[in-house]
Length: 364
Image 1 (cartoon, rainbow, N blue to C red):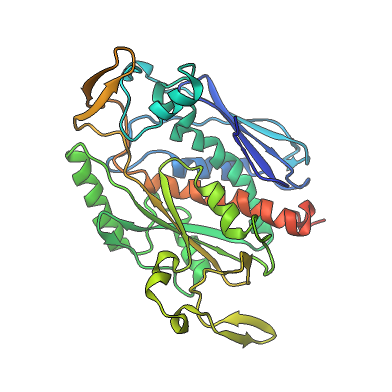
Image 2: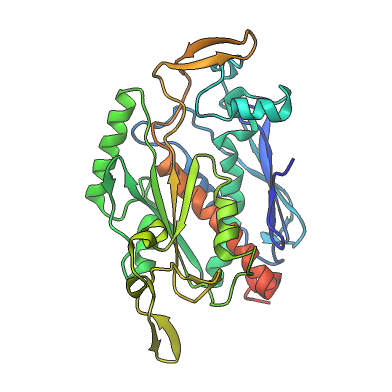
């Protein structure tokens, strides 16, 4: 089993959707990082369901830090966070019927039926809660080093948001407290109408989240196999429902000639910058000092109320299933804080590999 990510700064996830508790262990974080529990609560609130088409399972997420913090600062030893599961309804799930689009059958094949499938078990999006809690500490450490991360819903239900402007920090600040994270208010309203329509039709929607990271120094990344894109993609694909990751123009490069795809170099005072940022802040797998820009494609929530064909694992007969549990019609509004958190953890690991762990504590 492999439930850990990271080399210098690593995270391990544990627990199941309907188990007693879920949690995470953060190892390798620099000592002396301020742990703001109010910020952790704020980040968890952004992950909590709210608005149209959201699940009615609303967990309080009353986390407890049981190691690795003393007098409000990291000790440098493993930091463990526990989050109780309080609002569970295992009776909503018939574990004999495989849910289309879920990991039920794949998990059954891997764990031979010994896995806990209630609510998705260990594969559930519920386990993104400890990711967000631990990620809040990583985000705080990055901010102290002048590195900021923000995500918005770039596309949903045929509606597109505007991209990040030249005033990136203003955009990131705008997104911080928005329960529905779009840069254009009208686009957000139209997206919410699309979610409501899908909800009324007992269906679901996917979409695209776009993320920007500012303040990263140039020269971070280890070719060939620990590139910035490679390690970030590795981490981002751990998020349930992520099915695609692209950097800069991504697949759009296929339609561009080299004369348009290249980012010409300029001088800004004594700094070398690029005129455009088609490559999303990365060349040769290494940061070039421009903002890091990437997008994650999310598939529609697989839990829907419409009738679908499936197989009964116990009787080995073909049946139909219509899910009646508590589900989101679209997870993107809640997923953006998960993407921010996972990106922060991966970037902390990249920085620690390049400069050493104490880079994350500017007071050292």
